[in-house]
Image 1: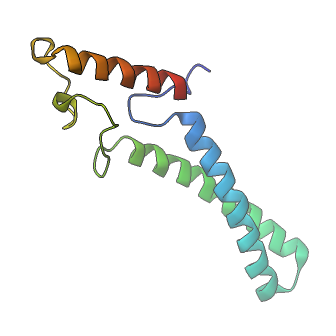
Image 2: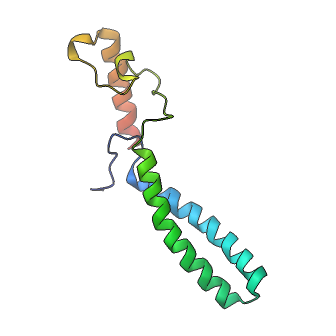
Length: 114
């Protein structure tokens, strides 16, 4: 889908969106249960849970996308050439034959998981 592709940051927008939805379903249930214990009304608890978690879902999605764009805390995929492990694109002159094979394998894996 256009607009949902991997932006070179390690995760597609579709994956971030799916994670957002799955977590918000869990969080909505928790919010509803706590609100019901506090308020004692199904209607008020449902309204509060849906409103709060709708807003939080939008914020969480943005949070996921920001974190997905950060390199901090990421490790290089197995087989990635040493010249790319620090986040810098390799100089074509620096790539030897074994790096070319590793790079091709990494690109194939990335294409498979998009």
